[in-house]
Structures are given as C-alpha cells and as structure tokens.
Image 1 (cartoon, helix red, strand yellow):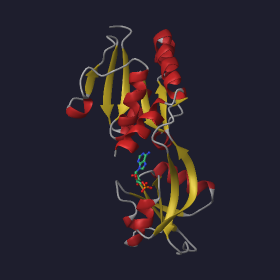
Image 2 (cartoon, rainbow, N blue to C red):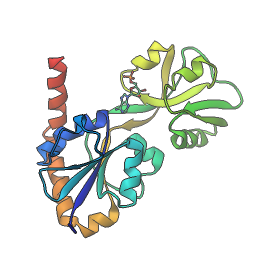
Image 3 (spheres, protein in one colour):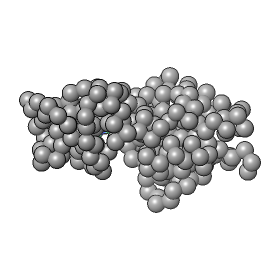
Image 4 (spheres, rainbow, N blue to C red):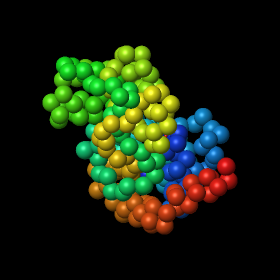
Length: 224
Ligand code: AMP
C-alpha cells in the first residue's frame, strides 16, 4: 500500500499510556500487544501498522523513514538527536524530569567530576555548558548505584517521585529538562503523506486535549 502509515511505539510504560490515546484517535491494534512477542501489529485501520520497539530506537526508525511517525520520550529525543524530526505534538504522558543527582550532603570534587549515566550526550552537553571538566561513564541501568560504590560523583537520570534516589541515599540536584512523550514525524513522510498524517495528528491532539491519558491513569490508580 503506497500510502501506508507505520507508527513506531516505545514499548513498556510509555506504550501503556499511548494505546488509550491511539484508541481515542480511532487506531486500535488488531491483537493484544502485551500478549504477543510480535514487533509489527496490524490495526483496525487497513492503512496503519504499529511497530513496538525500544524507546532509544524510535527516533532512528522515524529519522530514516523506516517508520513515518513515532512516540518517543523527550529524553530520547534529546539524547539521540530529534532535531531532524518534526515534533508536532506533546502527548503529555510519561512525564518525568531529567536531573543530576548526588549523594546527600556530599560536595562535588574540585577538579574533574565523574558523571555516570545512560544519557551520555545530554550529560556531555550539560557539563560543557557549565564549563565542568567531566569524565562521562556510560551505564545501562541502576545509575543510583554508581555514587554509592564510588564509581561516580554525580549521575544524570530520570526522576519521577524521587523515591529511587531517596532509597539510595541520594538527592536530586539540578533540573536538566522536563520530559514527556512526544509525537514525532519523518519530514519527508509529512510532505508525501500529508493529508493522512495530518488527520492522525489532529485526532491525537483532540484525544490529548480531552485528557484521555489522565482519565485512564486516574481509573487505574483508583482500581489499585
Ligand atoms: P522515581 O523513583 O519515581 O523517581 O522513578 C525513578 C525511576 O523510574 C527512574 O530511574 C526511571 O528508570 C523510571 N522512570 C520513572 N518515570 C519514568 C518515565 N516517565 N520514563 C521512563 N522511566 C521512568
């Protein structure tokens, strides 16, 4: 199908909050994504298919046009470089903050600072903008462990409630960016398939403005 639309979704917690928005916009997967190991899903719309992939891969798929559109956390867009992508809509879901954090009451060293993070590009930029001499240490998870084990002086990580930091004797320090999930669109696809893509953006905007995602999370909170 020439005018087929491929939408790349971030699996995990973002997916859970994305599906109600898509449903409100009239797009529903043909089968239960959570019960399948497939990566590509047909939908009730014959011209729309969904990819379910890692958040760090969504900007790459959309940038190269392997997907026409995608849902990506702003943290990933900042880290991987979302500048080549059209970002028409803040979906207002999976909100959190990208912050630096350190051990409670511990001052930073005078000279070079060791910064552990999975967001190495964001950390490099943050340190460079402040003239901080830094050694950036790439980790893939459990960033909070690094200062405890004296692997790093500072971490750059996602903070929501701050409970994970507190449980590990750490405190949030500096806000780098407010994060939420964004709709991103491949620039060439936006021109070539303009009418269809614009219609999807418009329906998603209506769903976001109607507070569909918030309604869903409130219902879940009161049910648990
Ligand atoms: P919290 O203890 O509530 O501050 O949550 C912190 C941890 O939860 C972080 O280390 C993240 O791994 C994860 N997390 C919380 N919110 C999000 C989000 N919106 N997107 C991705 N990861 C998140």
